[in-house]
Image (cartoon, rainbow, N blue to C red; front, side):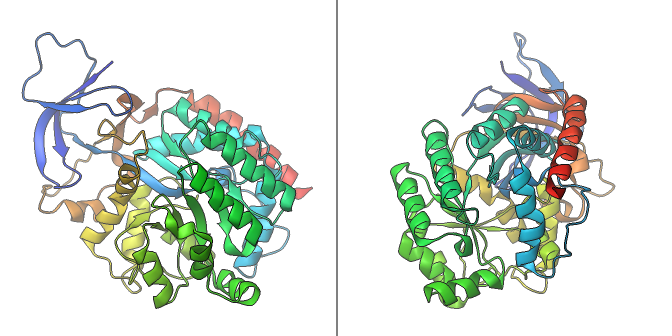
Length: 422
């Protein structure tokens, strides 16, 4: 069934032109939107009055981690981490080993709900649960589908927990890609041996997919590669074929030299910037110089609010990157270009966000970018439509019982935290 949005101001996400209009939104993947001057007398579609509201294309997240969703407020690790390797070892690798499928399900549900409430209708996720590998991707997909958020998932294949679990990751990925769109996930060069890397690239080629991997997030990744493989990280990945795929996503890309950046720019792959995570882990600052234009934004599991991440990229980039208002908006919207150029589903025109933004200053196409960076926040998201379906109405999740999910998630979080102490 279609939805009719009336009396709203539509902001074109490409031209940034403002137009007061009615919008008929078709349901389903690939559904159209039609701009109507008048409401048809024979209209039978549900009407959502958007008087005084702004309507635009919804948002998307280029790099997320569902598995971190139940970590908020958990106790301190057994050892206070002194570097990035210890952050992984004592926090995230301790957490992911404790996950079971029930925890994964609720991690995905609360992540999808957080996405919807932030105006995000599509998330590219990078998942890890080494002792609950089988069925984990389908569990996440079902949870996202319940809430109504689109997804492009992968399992984080790695040798760090042994070759048997690496094999399970490859098998889970192959099974999932046989029926769903997705990517072949790898953790990072320093935890992936040559044979696993080779098999992952072969799987990506066989399934017409791509690789989703962390690259040079910390100097330790670079040092490990030069010491063990006598080459640079990007060289190693390029030789293995990772850079061959236009669907490949390289996350972080902080510690690269000019030569490596040129390799990436010359390839068809995409880079995801995750500024807040980099700041939190003290691993360095993103610098886009030499990487080309295929750069998009992600949250790296820190949260699901892309408006917040865009601001972080802009503010932190003042001293470390060549980024202005327009470039921040371009990276913010580039996830849609990645999805469209690779023919991924569930990010069509009928994915919209309605913003209740009562600004005290003029708001128009000429100053939109200033409002984007210094005014618009997730708190202004009032309604969200995904694939033509209303998944958030008056800031309330519509397709699942939000309060019940949160109550059950707290139970799962306590289970997770307890297991992490064992």
